[in-house]
Length: 385
Image (tube, rainbow, N blue to C red; front, side, top):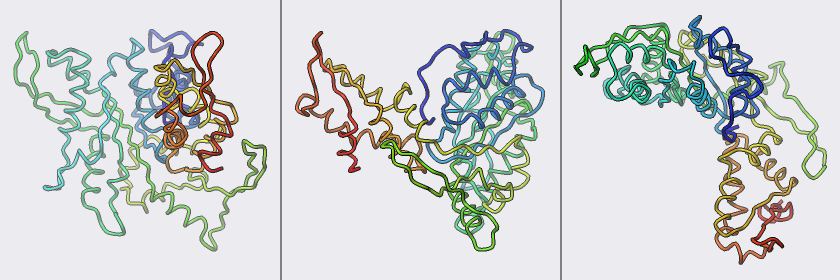
């Protein structure tokens, strides 16, 4: 899920809504699910929050928690895709993704909302053109979707010590999410002439999606659950491997044991967390989902190798068992999710891509050209399985 599907028509089974009364959370879910794999539960929350934001009924702020490679950024990217593909959503297209640490002046210990608004303004100008009227620029900015990445790095406690910068960031974002009028200095057309203006940007109509890996949170909750006397137990499940073997594994899933108080112990300010409509825990990706990403995602390492080997007139194929073995290897690296596929694929393919015809794996095709098949045996040898 850390990689998008090939682009296609939005929610092909349903007509694209032309008016708000034709829109539903289910339609939004269907549209996003075309590009996000393995996170259906999370997408249900996202769809409801987006519906609230699009219709202007309620704030739909979200906090996304998930290991690297589980799809936080992918969800954000596909929300942006949706805004740009559906004409009805044009007023929402000023969407920006910004790193949390850019919003704080560490020297002066000061939250800098103008940095966030500058990023929003750039997106708004890309939609409106370089010289928009002041009123239309303000209107688009006030309906922005703001994605703040790596918000977990701004905890109020780091390594057991107070982190004042984290408190400043959380309280600054909290104020914006509650709704604040921020004077924003820029240039815009006034009566047909470009002038310096101060736009009173009301953040109440913005949607905030904050995300982070929260790696320490996983360890913190795991320790709580496995401590003697906790009264909680990890779940054991039977796993059937790609080779047909069955083994019993005991695994920890944050979503099974997470409590809101865990975020407070982690160092998140309670008032900050209270501004989110929902705190959403993303799933670690399963073997089947990772396999699907490898074989189908438009930016998967497989697709990149296909394009590269096409330069040599070589068609690249992957055996189903070979794909399953690679997905299993990636799934074992749970802290990197779909990103693990790149390293695994590279270990197998880099020597081949260096000298395709010297690899001994390229076979001529009767109709012309060549083919190369990534087999299960090749994967086992390369990965030492």
